[in-house]
Image (tube, rainbow, N blue to C red; front, side, top):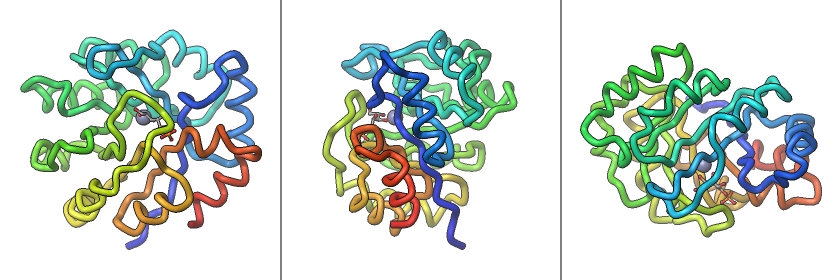
Length: 214
Ligand code: DX5
Ligand code: ZN
């Protein structure tokens, strides 16, 4: 069965000095959620935002907030992000040392959606036993840490393989544009994160529409 395509603009590429205007722009453009990239300078070599900013964004939009935690020991911060207003929290399997099952349960205890993510080179076998417990799997299509990188085609077989085993949302993140979106959807992805392609476009509404119907 074909799944509804959902578009998640990544605020990493937004102008943070004009965050409210940027959020309103993609909201008016018809996106389905906002993707918030949280980086700690340890799990990835970059630092971005914490619960404080998620809470601020929560006040200016009704869109679901899709919070992507690229941080070590995410279990320490789940309560803070859930209380700040996250609608979904995605954690990296590589960042949870031996306790992924409990971290997933912890997210569910807040009655919000739970996602688990893999870096491009981490095999699916790392999360196979958790597939029945999560709402979404985020397959990174670049090495996490920065926007504006090139989509890694080598992740495609992992998307196809996952779609055979998983009926939930498959999100792809990194280097998504019209061309790569088409490939990812064909392989089975249905949630597209896009930073540069949306916020770097002269008309974000147009690209949101295009990505939805590639
Ligand atoms: C990268 C982040 C992405 C990033 C995508 O680590 O997880 O969400 O913002 O940016 P683009 O769409 O520019 O590749
Ligand atoms: Zn992301």
